[in-house]
Length: 290
Image 1 (tube, rainbow, N blue to C red):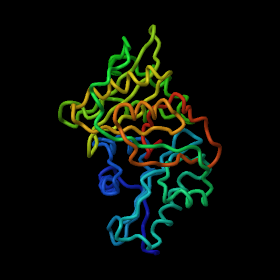
Image 2: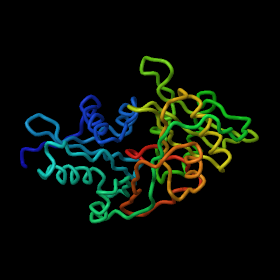
Image 3: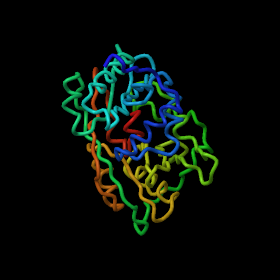
Image 4: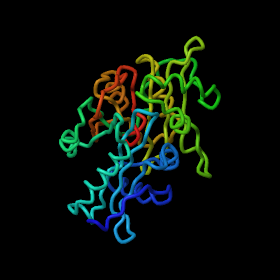
């Protein structure tokens, strides 16, 4: 295995990993890669054997104290080769001394626990075509985020993640066109008496759309944002929402809209477990970057 070379990948090189993730059924967003890679260009590692990519991991640094791990994949042709653990070790070295989070698929959770990660909660992906005949809860002030001060959004989201990640969120919620209309990523914010009370993003994926994050002060606002985001996409489009199991109102919201559970992960942390703000989290931003 000494001929395995592990190094940071360029955005173009890591595009191959996005295809691997799609093959695994992870259904990445069409413009996720650019947003992801800019967050920490040195944190997207790939393993190469004879100049061919065989493994990958993302180990994104947030602030000075935290990191988040994702995209841990070995190409099917090279599983069982030992390349996975070598890539894992290189990734963890990139995050040495930091508190590290991840969203672990069921079959890998015991392995992560052996590496010192502790369970913090289950997340469930709900997917389906949202029912349009269910009336939205009334909410008089929901606006596109491009019409509001971005610092309102950045300040609002701070309690939902234990480290500074303003640059990531600023890019994540920004509309993106990829040279086509409508935008592949759109975000809405809710206000009550002039105060920001929640926001959410919906983005185009390989199959259908994903909503995330979806943060709100209360159930009414979370439901109104969810319904409004669903109204942006075509009527027959499939939508996914990644819901913390601890937020029963969000679980009920997904089911009431006709979405069904299709996939789950465990949020795990190595180091101090943060307050997840589960009661106000109706949808996670990303299983890959937290």
